[in-house]
Length: 111
Image (cartoon, rainbow, N blue to C red; front, side):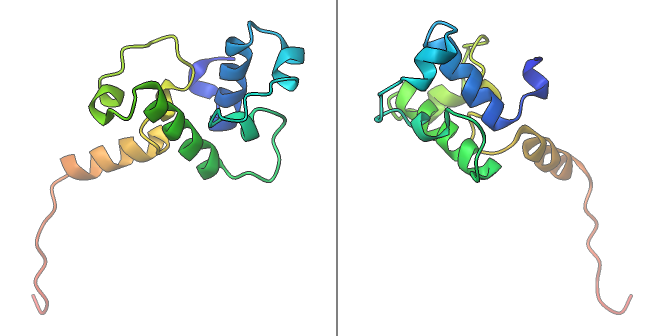
């Protein structure tokens, strides 16, 4: 599946598969409860998309030892979690950037 088409939960699953050498059996048997993605590695449950994105953010903070600037400058192109490293969905970031670029006009009441 293309990286752009993955939702946060699918990205977590792909990362866990990568971590375990591509073996779904090893992902199921994973005992690393300290991993921020541990609870979300299996089939999709009641967990919301926001929970997955926050877990990815925590994982990126752990990967960079809490350095937020390093997360912004992340050069790891092969990481399937990279799109969600800011803790928000990429579409939300695009919307915010568009709003900043658009001109905003001051409207005065009564005119």
